[in-house]
Structure formats: C-alpha cells, structure tokens
Length: 91
Image (cartoon, rainbow, N blue to C red; front, side, top):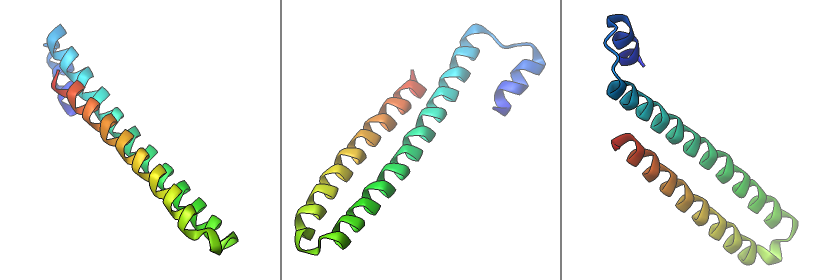
C-alpha cells in the first residue's frame, strides 16, 4: 500500500505499475478471505462435532468421521484458494 502511495505522489504510476499493484492488492484480499473462511468453517465444524458427540455418545465414531471428512474438504478448498491467490500475485 505504501508503494502505491509513493508512486501516486511522484506521479509516475504507469499502467503496468497500476496493474501490478492491483494484482498484489487482490492477492492479499484473496489470501485474507481464504484464511478467515477457514477459521470460521473449522470452528463451526469442531463445535458441531462436539455438540453431536455430546448428544449421542454412542455414535461418536460416525460423527467424528463425518466431521473429519468435512474438515479435509474445507482445508483442500482453502489450499486451492491460496494457490490461486498466489498465482494472481505472480501474473
């Protein structure tokens, strides 16, 4: 962000530099949203699994397995989002 402000003050913000700055800004926003979404999703999955096991202790293995599958899928989607954000940063 400070780089963008320095370019604006000098008046030397060319189209290529603006494209690069916008790419970096978009990558940062994408990374942040992916991590926030992962934290919210993992918290909800963990809370729901704990609540489900507390309600039905005899089904703990099935509930734990389902929660683990959802957590793995969420983690995979987050890693894909992070890779795409980093690719946009490099382009």
